[in-house]
Image 1 (cartoon, rainbow, N blue to C red):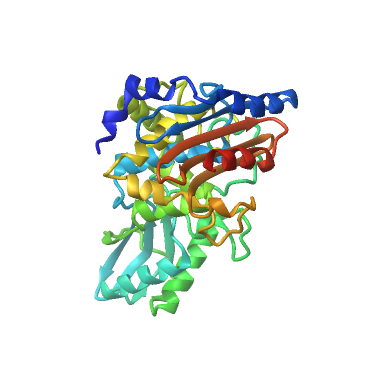
Image 2: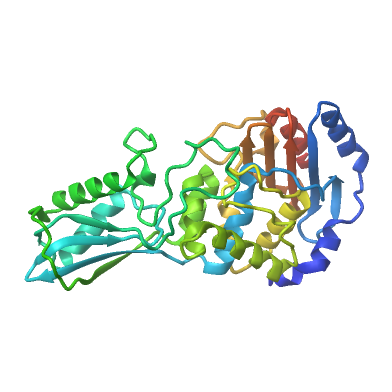
Length: 383
């Protein structure tokens, strides 16, 4: 089914219809407001867009990681699920020996791990590389010099590793700690893995002049797999890598492309999609429950990329995580993206009702709230 059938003013109008049991959700929301919590929430029928219940569903609040539900749909729809990002390897290869340095040019692959570098190394061996007279050189020119997204003034500085065009192992060490010298980590890891694969590095100074050529273009996993990891694990680093690549190396340009996508496809303004990053770490981001529902419902009806998008969300009771709420009726009936920051709790996704119908929901809470304020309402909607 073509998602454009559900775009623009028609979709917004359908999602804004008067709720059928508004008093119930209003009692819940007003109880939260008395505690100083701002609420934007709603439940809609996925087939028709008709509102079942809603409360301040047009109020834009800080969404935290539910931002990823917006970012990843735009990426899947724009790039398509089989899209890949190449890491290029350049060198002056003569009779099995690279004269000078072996150059790795990053292209924004967010999943360049040691295991995949091992595969890359063996691809280089098959391409005829046996020896390198120099060492490893990195080309980070695909991304500009900006070190973090805009709007991060109130975000913990050590939340995200440095996002560079060539980043190895998520720019973290073997204990998962952010490294201060990601280029050093990349060079060491690349050389160690290539040496284990049988490529010899002599470490001599590079010649003054060489004629390098592209020896290999190593593709990232397809976008469908990257989005799966991003939404299942809420991986901030991976999604910010993709946003930078989407903007041809520029965070602001990547964000604008996402906003332009929603403006063109759904008629949603920059105020509706008010984001400064792709992960939701920025507290400058603003989304409403209604906006999240529009995106989720479009993804559900999108034959081209919808299966990959819906599958990327966490399945309650169907993943290697324990259910936070002890309600067996929810098992495998909810697909969700959650979000958490200081004084921000959010959840959005799909509910399969007992009769098989599917509904779309979104809850954004800003203030002194917890998951325990969200799940009882979701359980009531589901049951």
